[in-house]
Amino acid sequence: MSTAAFALERQAVMAGLSDPMVANRPQIDRIRGVEGLHAELCFSCRKCSAGCPVADDMELAPHQLVRLAAAGLEGEALRSSGIWLCTSCQTCTTRCPNGVDVAGVIDALKQRAAASGVKPGDGRMLAFHRAFLDELKARGRVHEMALMGRYLLRARRLPEDMRLGARMVQKGKIALIPPKKTATGELRHLFERGKGK
Amino acid sequence: MTVRVLSYYPGCSLHGMSREYDASTRLVYRALGIDLRELASWTCCGASAGHSLDQGLAMALATRNLELAAAAGNDLVAPCAACYHRLKLGEKESSSHVTVLHALDVASSSETLDRLRESLRQPLNGLKVVCYYGCLLVRPPEVTGRRDYEDPQSMDQVMAAVEADIRPWSFKTDCCGAGLAVARPDVVRRLSSRLVEMAREAGADCIVTACPLCQTNLDTRQEKRGLPVLYFTELLACALGLEGTESWWRRHMVDPVPVLAKAGIL
Image (cartoon, rainbow over all chains, first blue to last red; front, side):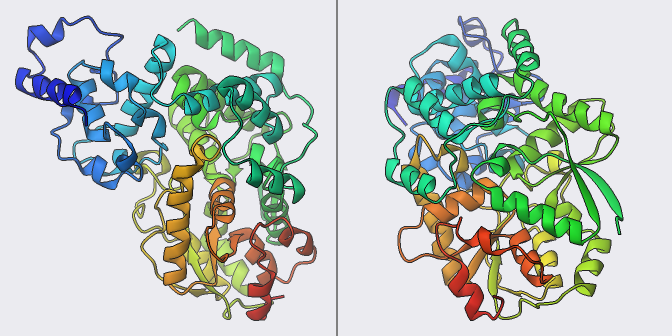
């Protein structure tokens, strides 16, 4: 954890959640108080981070992300690569003794990071998610070969494991020809509707 | 004889890289008298991209598919753990009366287990297996409704019904890293190869899975000599002595034929 993040966390803890200095800080769309997530119930037992399969790869571990969100200090969390490494395996949410939806908090951070335009801590994962939705919108169902192409365009880099990809094509696991489109008109409508929110 | 009719949501992977899971699911369920009817215009559930970027869109994608199932009038079965999870969330939040099931739920019902025992042609007792459930099939219990989420039993029950030699291990629900496969294979390789290593330590000849993403990750990210990773439906097809399994094995990265042959199954 960086010194700055630690200072922020300590500040948040020391200040308490009702401190006006914290409450009045200008923030991007607070996660604290989002229905169903219960970030404010965290007492930092770190059980979420202890069971997290990728906590060691994150510069801010799940319990730290939750604390920052609970205190309304999301800036550093939004820029961290940790949120993009989360596999959404739900171990944290399942094991939290206080019923905090930890994976839900991290999803909310990802959504806000993507929408706010901050430079993502791991641009590859954001590019992958965007490529996936591009493909979904264009075809209705995701075709793996086309998804790789869209990832290349979004990330401006080749998928990391090209040798494996080639072997999967050779094995016939990844098909070269995409399927027909399904319900794309209807999906375009769903995508547009989501944008207004 | 048809005993149950269900709507079927294969999801993108079963029409793509995991066609052997689709084929084996259809074959086995037909043999068990379960009529799977694919929803004609199903669309992608959005997977982790959906809920990572747009909560409203993610729910709308699930709801759209549930509405198709509601119109068809049957409960909905999904063989992919990620699709199942997204649809199950949709079921919770929408007003539709469709119940979303995972393929394993259907296989582990007491009627199906009886049927499996009755129709068993080729007991799998020569095959040492570990059952791998992964994440989204079991967690969180508020979504999946499972009470045994830390030590799930449904796949064990199914494998026991066909007399496989089930090895205990503590990694049934550890994450394989699925969603990171394209952009961060470095992380996935670490998570998946540890699972394979632990399966080997438990004395298994193969890992049994119930999700196309788990299977693909474990099958493709093996660092050392390979341990085959099979779908539970492929093994059920063998146990029931069904025809048409040969073309599936070629699609595995780690060839399962030697292990199955050694166990006297092929």
